[in-house]
Image (cartoon, rainbow over all chains, first blue to last red):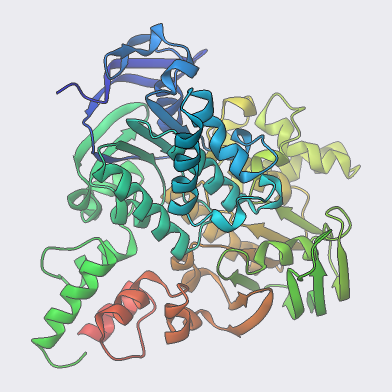
Length: 274
Length: 258
């Protein structure tokens, strides 16, 4: 099977400032991948390369069987939906609904299909009540969600999301998690850049870590997030649920809240009440 | 000694009928760190805009009640990239922009800029062009630029949003240090797990009104957990069905478990 995304020996510099050096990885359909690392490690550069906004200095970025070097960003948008770090810059229409429907309409999808995709994306993120609002009447966190809805409405094979949960409360984060799990179950690959390791633990299954422009780590996310000694040199620390599981030595060291609660209850039943 | 006093503040954004803040009374003392928590739309960001004298002065709208600042304030918005001057070609000059506009003498500008860069561990980036920075680096530059103006009242909206673990740790430590120096800090955050180590008081906002005020232990209350405002550890405890009171942090949990 052709991977949805393949980075093959990719290097990139901003002038004299190196950003990525010889980075290679594949992502398969339906995979949910976290791209982690310190500020300035090169994560957002990966997003820009995948979206075709930058071209690699060396190596190749493949989106399916397309070499991004041969594709304009608007062509790549048929396969890649990108949410950028400062998503304010992605909104331009005078209502949330118009903004979300712009993408599928620009892809040339029929009007009924545009409506369906727009409704689904708004519904997935609980934005239906805000559909008629002007995006700039919404708080920044909801603007980011509106931009995310626009990306979901493209129904791309690959979703690339840069910090999708900033400023979101727990209920909305859970909504984003649910939305991404649904898209992934339907076959879309998901690549998320985030410092929110609690969200990553709940949502994603594989962890890539960039360290000063090189790929330092590629493994199941739960194992990585539970291992404080390996996270520390990468500038990461275990999210609280993983730290709790480790501190109490819960069986299986769960990193997701529901699983940790279940294990905690199970272990507590077998011992005197704490 | 108070730095900020809000008395019975209600606020309406332009062309809206329902208020974004409802009868909020709150004071922040010098040397104190107060954290605003709440669901999205609860009013935390609006309260910070009022505290900064940006609402209604810049946003428009209508305010009733009184908001008194006893110190000069500086605010870091949740969209810090919109706060860059866009007129500086180095991080150092960007951070100097605010102090220069205050008309300070050159040596005082330099002293404050160097100090702020140091505090946010930005000295190695001082000569970088701001447009080449990552999101998290830029967020730290904007925080430095605000602190370089030496505000007595520091207002921070999601200040750790784009920071990595090291950056967030540095920031929270710095906030404690600022309070120790006598600055008043009022911040809004959805990073609830950081608050037990940082905040002196937590203010829980709901639908524009204050629902509860208390020490960070508030974030282990049953009601807070059920409203999605418990710390991760408290929420896991609550979900597990174990009896309360719930531990607030991993350290608390470990003590109770043993």
